[in-house]
Image (cartoon, rainbow, N blue to C red):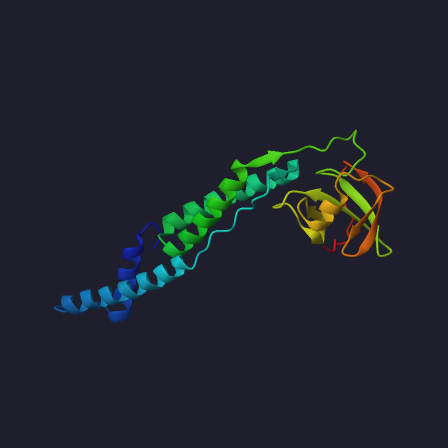
Length: 201
């Protein structure tokens, strides 16, 4: 069924379901009725699936990105374009609705992305910094990145997260309060050396 429209695919399925051994002579009316019934059911299901698709919300915060984060967005946008093209070719309206939603999201995120490179001369915590802290007796190291790049399990936290906000503009030796506990900043630098431990937000 490659290259055929959605309507042609449904008509072929109708033929197989209503006349598995081939359409008998003189039963055109019954055949057309079967096609109409199946097509009606198929499009009702597709309309329901399409209406269930909700666009991913766009963050109201500035879309600051690291160089790695920008590359991830561009790769996600490229993948979304390919998925969208495939959905268009298949004629599947439900899949096209999902693909269109993803394409809109990544197009918007690429359009408002602002690349920020941390200043290696600054000793204070900034966007893109890698920070080492002691919290509840445990040492943690993580990088402060953009929202789409953030992965706490891989030691990358969003710059708008409460933990990142508590540390911004501070330097090694400073302390900060986070969730009723004191955090000590051990080191901060612009090198991307990340700890293996997940960051608890």
